Image 1 (cartoon, rainbow, N blue to C red):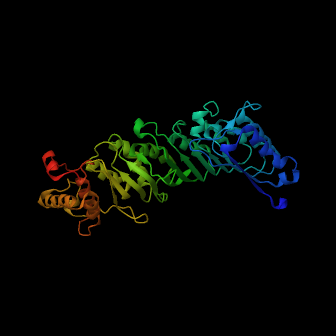
Image 2: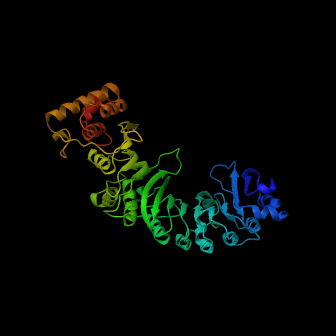
Length: 432
């Protein structure tokens, strides 16, 4: 079996581990086996049964010693957390990075937190092609002296990188401008993924893209694909349209203008909201320009549930800008969330705006025809309930173009805007 050994996984349980015990276990299997050590090309250190919101500071001195024992390492993957600065290692990041820099074959590296970025210049001569830096926000909270603020400029020394992942949190203040600087300084990048971006020019409540990961495909410094996906697939997080506009402004210089082929799609697998305040046309211009350089948009959710009244026109403009989302979310008058599925995941997002006068850019429900339809829609809500009525309006094949049906739904959403019922009418007809 020893002859076949090429990959080693060191697994530990935080509940039972101590620094001293871990240090002994880390080195023991290798100290007396020089032949085995020379064959190990992959080292993975992972934590099992990790309690929620906790990380285990890795003892830097024995980890650095282990790395020097394995000169053939091609891949090193370390878990989220930090390097412990207990004696005899007063400079834990420096000790581990120095040991990593001594590995001539190292190409694939995962580091425990973004704060280590300040020292990665030591790895510039290695020829790294893949680097992942974890989010260790809880380790930062409990051990603020261990993790330095990220110095992303140091990553520019890693000129061979083709794949880079940075998992940030709101205390790191990684911005869209940092993303473009990385694309400029690392011309060999083919894939860049950054989670937890902060759009600093937006209102405080709207500036964070926490819970989402920006994934970019790159070719010679130009963007070839754009996706914003949930970092945790079990949750769909919201991004304000204002923050997306800041991100779009940063990405625009890295997109090829016409007549170059357009980017296949702008994929937003998160929820997009109008934000705390209505964004004006000038604010949204970069997002509109970026959309025009893409073949289309793929939006998972547009949410009008943002803690303020969103007008029907504002919601319509967002759908026109980004295309049909898979689902549209509203509040109803009693604070319940309503969901309407507008398309399947693989269906085209282009909104059919029709050609008749009713679907022109004038006010919806203009004329007697429109008022009659509005009264019918409200009766449907009272009879079937809001969720069923909204779904029925959208699914009605005889209901006109998609824009016409969208306007009918928006006019029915009292919290989200459109036509308002007066107070006496609402009291008579009840909350839906």
